[in-house]
Image (cartoon, rainbow, N blue to C red; front, side, top):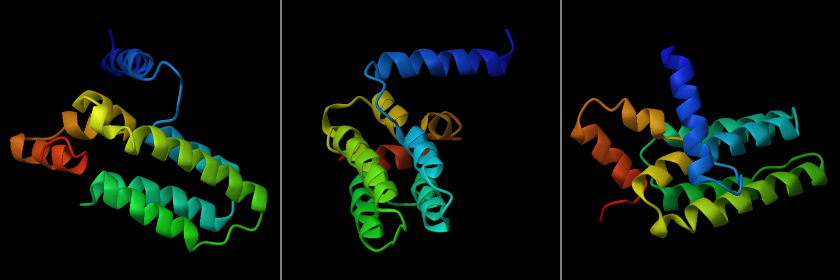
Length: 137
């Protein structure tokens, strides 16, 4: 079986196992927000959310910074802002507020970091993900 097909099938299986209610993980949130409006500010918000994956902030710092970001942008259509904030709130309430009861695999799934973690070259790099996802104190 082709590696990319195998990986895609396993990602679908993992998604189904970890997310039976089909709530959005971070990657899906980013994609759905991007699709709400072509406004530059909305596209920039999607980029801002994606940038968290490679920066030094942990999930609680991420939450705080996104809330601040959303409070300081102006989206032309009120309906678009409400839709974006609803999606963010659902993600926040499920993934961030629920992080304490998650396994590391669930955390990696919810925050779209499975590939990043799998591609970490050593334990030191993996430890950064444990810290980012608040899996170790």
